[in-house]
Length: 364
Image 1 (cartoon, helix red, strand yellow):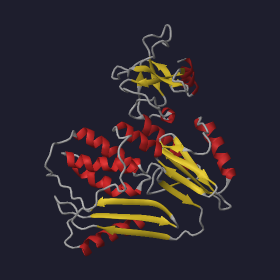
Image 2 (cartoon, helix red, strand yellow; image 1 turned 120 degrees about the horizontal axis):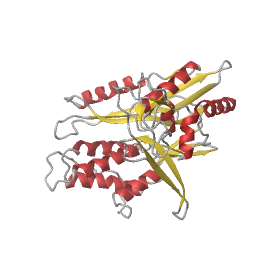
Image 3 (cartoon, helix red, strand yellow; image 1 turned 90 degrees about the horizontal axis):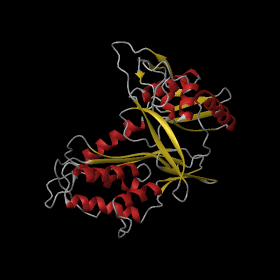
Image 4 (cartoon, one colour; image 1 turned 45 degrees about the vertical axis):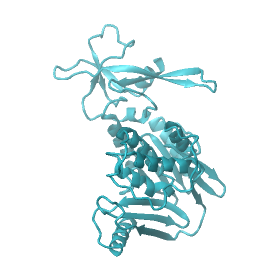
């Protein structure tokens, strides 16, 4: 707790102030996270001061706490650290505090301003991606997710300069070569980079009690037709949505289940046993393909290639078709989609034209 208070004082997070009559001070509370060793014994507790209303603290983004606030926000003095003789005063926040709804926005605004003030260009299509080109033509990329940064480029000197600046300006910690990011595991090897979600896939199997299930060779039964009006016992929609949502995140690296996951997601409002069995089959397929992922090998062939296809009137309820496409740069797949079309097409030819149009839009 002492470390947390010192950190707030060092960052000049707040100042003592008298609460204006028209304002209301937000309560704050202490939350704790235990660090355990290999034997499951607690080695250390980390205290965090948060605005009340947060029910759980998993991995709080420290960056959110160093964004500048535009509004006047007051909080109560934290328990155990009330200034003697100043008990009636409150803390006026200069910077965001974890738990405030303004915190993520304040942090993003601050780091975005820093990047743009230092000659980084924000990608107009991926707002979390920034690039910078030096005078001699070296290029540097930064990708931002809350306060997690990953970066790469053509000159190692730019890496070192960037790390030093981030440590000085934002007190960020250098974790080293990326091995794990947002549930995606990364293996960096001499002949390329392999990304996969084996650990996350195992968590899904455990969560839905499918660790010991029988294996299948395909994520979907050949020729199966599903409808919203399937007969049979209904399944808890919340449970089914949880399963489908978990599978959806797995499609970050698993293109092979993308269409099937999209198909079962059509029935989340009123799922039946038939729909649930179709979703469970995907888990049985994943069990046998845990080590599947995407391999990004080194290549000098940067030819831009797209493959697209569609089915016709696949949905038995509204007779809409599904578009699918995948883009390659050389031998590397980097963006893909499987999505129901927004209109009813009257022929396979028309369905293919709709898919081709969506591909052109994505290519542009």
